[in-house]
Image (spheres, rainbow, N blue to C red):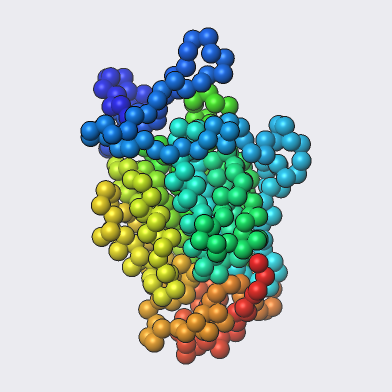
Length: 395
């Protein structure tokens, strides 16, 4: 990492209207590609040396073969399986049913910024969601240039279906955005929507997905901008959205949502302030190892601020209630819900009453507060509410 001290810093020129985080905007955070003049293969000749005083250890990178090209390249494979548009992901919104949904997004940009640790982060977050009864079919993974078998759990807790879970390339940005928009535009489709982000980031909060053409320049198709994220989650029909962001400058995302009037049901939990880096995988590790069954999201965030040493986690709550856990169950109920009550009323998918489903087509959807009242019991006393859960054994 080199501090760019030149007066005409490109980042400053791009955002000269603001002087906040001036020093950070003049930093070069990614290793350059250095190759010999006549090398058509553009082989990287920079090497990393560990055990240098004052510097971190060399990161463990993915292999050259794993990062040399897109897994499922739509140019080479003219199949529906490699479709880059909305046909890639089958968004699951079944009639008379509302479910918890999740998207795990992890870019990589190139081999030098695609670390094994990001692979582990995706795997750990996936299995955390599965432990809390998110259905496999309702968890979509977008990872770097794509990969096979990264969901496998070394603890031998992986089911056959989980091991076969599809991992889409993060480069398939349009497919990912369509999936988000479909989930957010469908009334009574999503209860708790978890969106996890773990990518190399620009100082403005944008996420780098993958350098598809290997030219080193972040084109529009290779970056998921903060404006696009705000647009995709605007007035989302999900009962609540949990945006968990473990990447540098993630406080920029929290800051944008705090100022927004269009994201009242979005809760953002960021690994760092807007001027800070995200170090290692501490933030993801804490969230993925936490038993969220009876812990409020606000308490998980508060404890992460105590545990993390190298950055200060940030958040944006809006008007959403903080007193829920990751799958939307109230966490401040006394006495706490029993496991049976959670299975019956909160875990898995839930049946939606016919009358409530029909009403969504004959008049505008309920305001969020109305939905919150209609869709879930908030205490054991009113657990005989018209909305009941069913224990769905479908994988």
